[in-house]
Amino acid sequence: MKTLLPTSTAGSLPKPSWLAQPETLWSPWKLQGDELADGKQDALRLALQQQQRSGIDIVSDGEQSRQHFVTTFIEHLSGVDFNQRKTVRIRNRYDASVPTIVGPVSRPKPVFVDDAKFLRAQTSQPIKWALPGPMTMIDTLYDDHYKSREQLAWEFAKILNQEAKDLEAAGVDIIQFDEPAFNVFFDEVNEWGIKCLERAIEGLKCETAVHICYGYGIKANTDWKKTLGSEWRQYEEIFPKLQQSNIDIISLECHNSRVPLELLQLIRGKKVMVGAIDVATDSIETAEEVAATLRKALQYVDADKLYPCTNCGMAPLSREVASGKLNALAAGAQIVRNELLAG
Ligand SMILES: [Zn+2]
View (tube, rainbow, N blue to C red):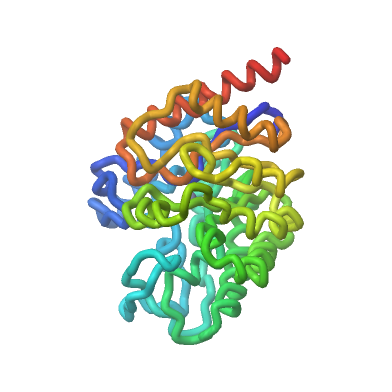
């Protein structure tokens, strides 16, 4: 990446109201069949144009063709029965009705590759594509077959690696794995979670990222955050092993969170996507607020490794708020870029 402080988003952007109910997760599609396929592509174009108008450097599909960042991927795998649903506790935080693993899991055909090719054809800018991470996938399922979280995660890692290689071939520049579960199950992360992630990126030549956040701005997550105390030191548990891993970029929640930014010292050497936009509030950051977060992060991250970003996906926000936040992110990054170039 030649641009200094290249901006990007963690992933999702709001969907147009004609495609799905806005400001809702798992919102059902309003179109069907060919109309749905066309509608998803039109929404992807709009999401891309919004990022370009705001001046975002590394663009994405805004996850316009997915209902949810984990379940849409799982729906395309065999070995999973969506009719057999069980209620499980997601990341020890909230109950959800999830599908059941009933046999060996596999990927009969590519999941997002056509969408990625479509995005690639629309722009010559660097593109980033998000996939769920293995540990977050197992946490969104009931396993009636392997009966081992580690073994299931390993199987998913192999499947993700197939998908990632196809995405790379489609021209994706950065493949990101979303692992909010890394902030919860520290022992498992250190024992096998990071190893599974490394299995998922095996043999890739494009850049790879892991996104670890405190979740979307939904009530279950904001309630959980209230129990975490005045300092959020969860990252401290997993950073030493992540620093040693083969992952190129680590995407984190930094703005308005209680994460002490000095923890970033533990991942010195890695590129860091610094979340400078709070996705859990409708109030739009000023460019100066974004710049202040980036300046703080610069104390612990080398300038050539700092990627300004959002704390998490913006799917639950209104389009108006999301576009205001994208503008602020780009403007805030520009302030700090100018300072660095002047200094
Ligand atoms: Zn997130």
